[in-house]
Image (cartoon, rainbow, N blue to C red; front, side, top):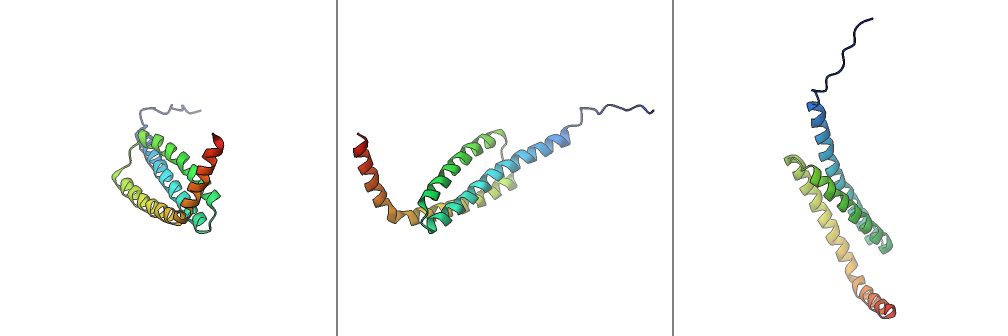
Length: 121
């Protein structure tokens, strides 16, 4: 039987590079997930499903919290930062349209909230 050599542990450089790339990719994945949620929110707003809009907004809050943690661990590379910028622009456009669609409902919501605040006290 031949002698088996033990793998040396001094070779993790490529492994570390792959891990760094995976961490950066996961940060971009959060931005992409938030963008998807913003598209879903916009579609729900267009169809008047405001309950779904609120649920998706809650999902975005959670994703943003997770994104902040992931972003602290590994900053984005320059090309990833450009991709992030493009994603953020699309998210902001979706958000602006959701807000525009919600505008007619805001006075009703305000009246509802005022009525509830009186019944809570």
